[in-house]
Amino acid sequence: MSQVPVSATDAPALTVDGVTVRFAGVTALDCVSFAVAPMAVHAVIGPNGAGKSTLFNVVSGAYQPENGTVWFRGTDLTKLQPHDVAGLGVARTFQNIALLASETVEENLMLGRHHLTRAGIIGSALGLPAARREDRHHRARAREIGAFVGLGDKLGATAGALSYGDQKRVEIARALCVEPDLLLLDEPVAGMNAHETSVIAQLVRDIRDALLIPILLVEHDMGMVMAIADRVTVLDFGRRIADGVPDDVQSDPDVQRAYLGTGEE
Ligand SMILES: Nc1ncnc2c1ncn2[C@@H]1O[C@H](COP(=O)(O)OP(=O)(O)OP(=O)(O)O)[C@@H](O)[C@H]1O
Image 1 (cartoon, rainbow, N blue to C red):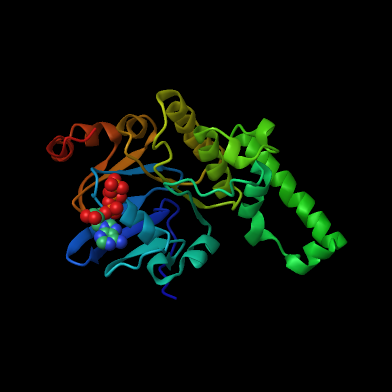
Image 2: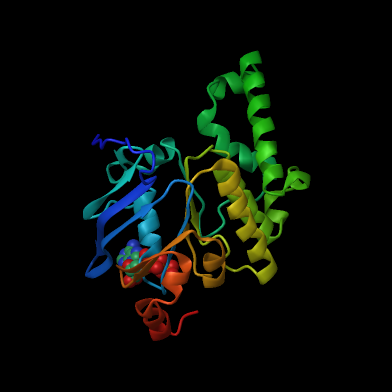
């Protein structure tokens, strides 16, 4: 596995360097580079087809780029499979809700703890004391995280019966149950009304402030991004056309052209 030195304390938490992805004639990402600072909420925005999902899939290990690297904690994530990326402390949510609809919120959160358990399936199935102790510990932590995201009174509810906004919160809580060092949020407010959007926006900020981890956010909702992001990278047709603080990005002529040109937002 390739290694780079991680020495400076202000070194980026994540470095995307020259990433190119092509699909049968379409250049989805064209030599894209940017860095995510520690503890930053870093948004990636862009019109439809700009390459945002592709970028997310590269960072989470689902796609391997044709060129480029993604450095996290001294490791090039592009050389890893998704479960190894997750094992390094990278947790993600999905654009489409992916919960066990017939299970309770608590059981869905427990799925996020799975990789942290040691007792194994046989120990748990036999109800061995060590397995029971471990289960209690992880359940307590899952409940704590459920309460943190505002679902403390819904831990026993069936996930599929919750409102859309609450289901999104379960997804985010499940990602937090992994105890991540980097959180990837894929369009967390897609399909939400203004109230639900502001609740999730506040939650994203709370997560960063409480856990002090960087959050990479792919999002369409420009208002939400401008309100909560510390830094914004803008993609258009697979190219990085802007990268900076929200105010600068918003007034960037290339960004305005990209959005107006597609009639978006
Ligand atoms: N698996 C694939 N096979 C072929 N082309 C793909 C594939 N995935 C994405 N593309 C193409 O790559 C480009 C970037 O797509 P991507 O989904 O990453 O954009 P996006 O910014 O996430 O778009 P949206 O906002 O609509 O979700 C598009 O032209 C898309 O059609």
